[in-house]
Length: 193
Picture (cartoon, rainbow, N blue to C red):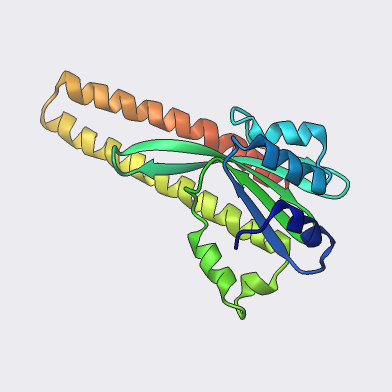
């Protein structure tokens, strides 16, 4: 549900478990207001909007911070894209800041709608775990997709050799390198948890 910035302070003081998801890193005024309400460190605030930042994990006194990249396949042109996502995990609140609404969290949102679901009964750390699992599943799907493209080209190369196929193979190898640059730091950050 959508809530106003003024209502967010009630979540900070509440004993109930809450997920605050902010979409759109261009709205710096909103991000600064949320950061002020939850007393996020100024260095943490910089990490929210710095989409070039590598995946990382930091432990503060009252919360932990996790920065990752999400991968998704744009089916219109079959290209891989990454999106910056920032997590701030408090005892009773999980805040996420992401570039846009394209995320793998749809099933998590559906599970949260059911009152008897385990994710609804768990703590914020279990919610974070479910989100990390969704992101990692997305990584695996991306790798499988790229691997399948490479296998298809290899099959074609052995049947016939052309400069176009070699260029495609090179392009897919570059996608693997790009994907690896996202997954390796994310793995390190998750293992630091």
